[in-house]
Length: 453
Ligand SMILES: Nc1ncnc2c1ncn2[C@@H]1O[C@H](COP(=O)(O)OP(=O)(O)OP(=O)(O)O)[C@@H](O)[C@H]1O
Ligand SMILES: [Mg+2]
Image (tube, rainbow, N blue to C red; front, side, top):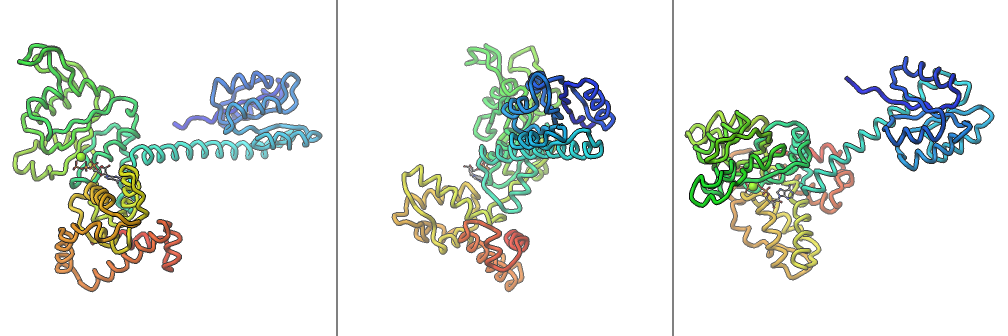
């Protein structure tokens, strides 16, 4: 059910106030009362009203004084002032002080209804917008995920949606596509963000240690267990666990993990007592779990438990349009790290980066830019800064594409895309400007950037 909009009616004339309260309640609002300016201010400090309807002429603390105090305390709350015809001047003064609108007495009820509706909508939109902006700012500021391609925008939208749910998530994608970054975004935008987020790499830890890490142990349960150790499931209670490289988890551990997930309880190794746990599991893998299942190397039941929602991180090749953006981002980072001041990259070198296959995805690009920054002595990174890329897999891929597809069509589209990317670069990534220069619409520009090979 939608929450009622709350209105504080401030008037020292009790009959008028009660009349207003009754009227507003019949219009479906939740109405609160205050009989003078200072009481109104006290109430505003205690409750976040959506709207205030306030008489200007009150004996103790006037509407103007109260408006000042309220606006100082919370500038975003809309205040509608009621005033007699004779004091319109004061009403204008109130507008200057930040009142949303004023309405003259005797009140025209139709007008009052419209004014209140508009003010309430305005307030609602404002808070919605702030929340939205905050959400976006959070995910982009803190996690630093770069990418404006359609694939990345879709991915971020999906991640934001999933973040708010409690569902377990499986993030799949090739190595270096940013799975861990996505895991961070999901956790730190969700309702568990203030609780622990503990990361475990299933490939980096030997089997016996992995069990001890996940479930903990009691003192004396094996040689070397000199004191009790809490497992990750307990430590991350009410928070989340990031199970990285899930595809590498040994089958025995998979069975134990499944038990914890099903029973929502964990028992430390060698312990008697079990503890109930409430943990969200975000896992990641660059393996194809379905084919591991076919080979008997991954449990199907565990797969379906952890894969309530799947997020696929696109390979860098599938979002070539992001390469210039990422390059600039990493250039900035590594200039700083290496105390260099390289200004940019030549168009030929950028072209090379765009053509390359990037089997190691963003991580490989990041390393390439770091190497480029270190190796370059001039103002700009050029082809020689990336000479080792020439022998890469990129060329092979180009050839196979041409063999498999209509040659003419591919090269034309490729050419178009290159021109667009270069123009975009020249315009500092301003799509509207680039589209104008190319005499195409922004929409066409976007679709041409996102075509898949
Ligand atoms: N969209 C992006 N914007 C900025 N940096 C990124 C992006 N994607 C990945 N990176 C960077 O690339 C590196 C690799 O990312 P990450 O570790 O998240 O990849 P991964 O998919 O978990 O890789 P692996 O499968 O090898 O573990 C990190 O340093 C990360 O910061
Ligand atoms: Mg990773």
